Image (cartoon, rainbow, N blue to C red; front, side, top):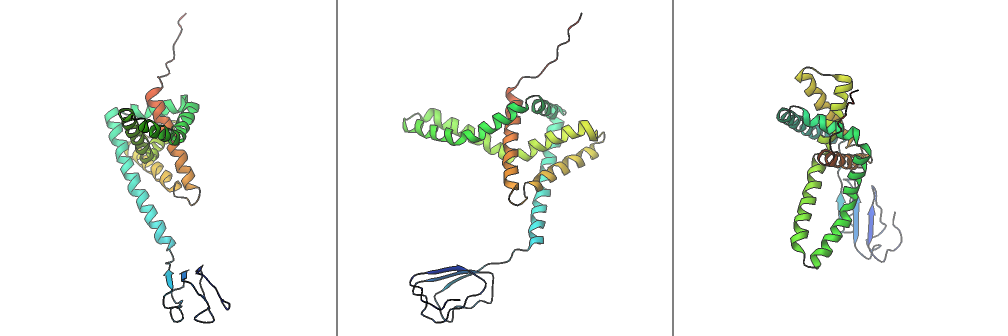
Amino acid sequence: NVSGSIEEDLRCEINTLDISGNDNVKGNLFVNTYNKELNIKDKYPNATVNVKEVKNVSKSFGNILLKAVISSLGFTLLYVIVKKITKGKAYEKMLDKAKNNTLFVVLSGAISILAFPALFVLLILLSVLGLYMITLPVAVVYMAFLIVFVMLSVYVIGCTIFEYTNKKYIKAEKLSLELVGVFFTFLSLNLICKIPKIGTYIYMAMVMIAVGIMIAYFLKGDNKTKEIKK
């Protein structure tokens, strides 16, 4: 309720607005509202009124679920392709590297993500010095590395989780059962990442762990047990 004089702009987000006269607001009037019936144009024809739409929660969840299902189907197909090409050895190696180098996975993933701003500044400094032959390839490779594993973080984590649970608990012998398990693993991870407020942090943690797993996959040697014969 505005009964006094406002010498400058009035900017507000409200459901109801009552201004006593047509000269109370000396400046411009900007209104954000969910009330479609709010009519302030009679007194202030030049007012900017932005009517927001109420989001349909069920429709929003349906869209999220549909996107998660499509993404999970894509990752399941990728899982099958990689398994066929590597005969399942890629997933076994991924799990072994994650289990045997847990601390390395966490630290290397965290350093890779956190080091990006520092590396970016360093590359700018090298560019200023005219060392383009160094900065450009490093920047392209590093950015490509991060982008790929940001996109594939759910895939890497999902494959590792399913490989572990399948070996220890499910022990799926039929391909159909295995594919169902893989699909629901990916679907669960996709939906977890959509949880309001905490989903973003979970996704960031998944990206960090995924990057760490792949660094360990390519850089860490295989742990071979040696038997001592007496």
